[in-house]
Image 1 (cartoon, one colour):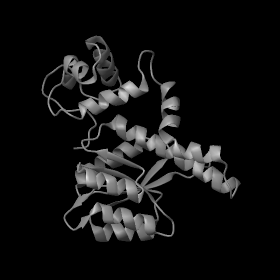
Image 2: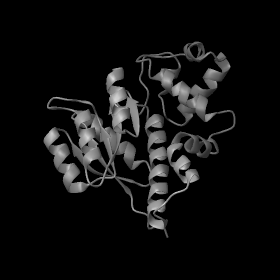
Image 3: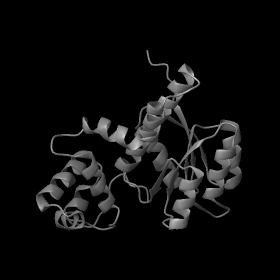
Length: 232
């Protein structure tokens, strides 16, 4: 019997349509539970103090605040909360400040579901390791610290066994990054050129994403469309 407590997530996003999409994405992932949605500074601060969530999904731009200020406050709480930025903010100074304060990940909108999923899986693995270490011991070894810090390596190795033959997880991430550059239809030729791979390789990855329902078929075949399951 699995008695592990779900990771409690607070969504801080003033666009309620986007917040609801994030909530639905979370519902598709095992081990997570959305405990609240905050659309303003007052709501965000109140929910942080009352709910004490494990994880906050946080935008940068709000009418009444800078999301980076909420990030700072989250790190100053007695029970420090982890934060994943999900934002359209691309300024390098904002990215650098978020990293300096201690953000777990920084995702630039529009967000494809696969990118969202991979980040939350990495966080779940990190959170699980941390809970186990706290429960079992007060001191950690160098190997255990390395395992906590090298979240990306652990997740790529675990995800690889779930992918079909011929689909490499690192290459898949690069394809998804290329898809973030477009708002209209994209072809295998375009992806191949951007990545420096063959058209056949590019088409194989696009067909995999279509089969997994991560992008719409019309996007991959050059007609007007946007990635299915995106946060805009």
